[in-house]
Image 1 (cartoon, rainbow, N blue to C red):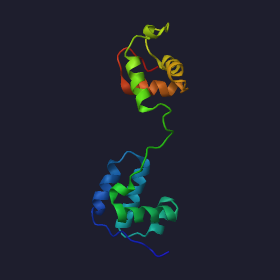
Image 2: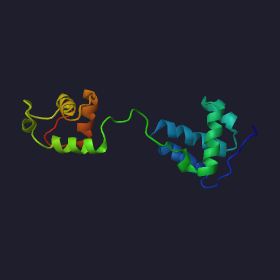
Image 3: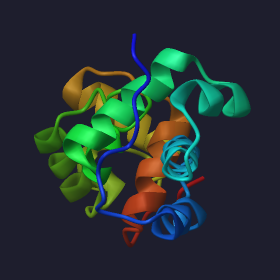
Image 4: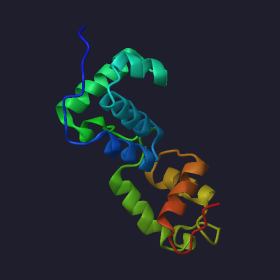
Length: 148
């Protein structure tokens, strides 16, 4: 395989380092760093060795950047497990949580992680973890709910 080089001129080395410094996602930081190093004149194998990556990875990033620019470096989907609840189910759950738990026949006063888990099992027949339910509540910050 022949050595490649960055042929795109959308961003300067300094701009790429700025992207690197402002990025919070560790994987994207790594991509920006690799491209910045290549813009400085290092080859993909040199960058791979310096960053402890596979050479195929740096060649792939180099090709992707040349073909699609900085948008091509971005990951297509977020990491982690996909939600077991559909968007419609999440909207219904959010609506339900705005109501008092007593309206559903529950004996607790406020929605908490355990209550949300129970409600999801009852209404949707799906099981989620208490921590995931707590994160949902915290993210929504709805009145009448407590994340813990």
